[in-house]
Image (cartoon, rainbow, N blue to C red; front, top):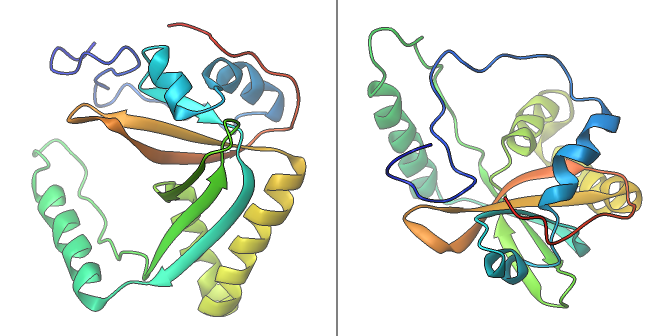
Length: 189
């Protein structure tokens, strides 16, 4: 438990304690994510949560090119963060921000439309990887097809959370392919 952060779902990760156990099998995703699913961020807040998963409807993947000044600010912020590493940490790789603002618009189960900037690192990684093979324009189209097509058809959840300093502001942390099906709500931590 992080003594500076009173959110129930928050904890301080100790460096060196996380282990890669391999790919999470599809069958293992459901028990991990179902307890988090709520109809809306407001429903999650009413349960006292700062972490939730939403089954979105009417999903649209949107993007627009970032101005050069925003790209430079992101690169500078990353560089400052990388310099804070201690001598026992591995050196951080140089980071080039994604040249597009990536976001999702969707409707939650309460019928409210939301727009969230994409904080999902896998989406940004896919952008860079696919861009090498397909170019920017095709890559953006492929991401749009994946999220609006395959993910919506098979099932998707958006994982959202708040920050300790902004407990009422929900941030899109991850986009997870999760087969459609019955799920529980009202789980309390």
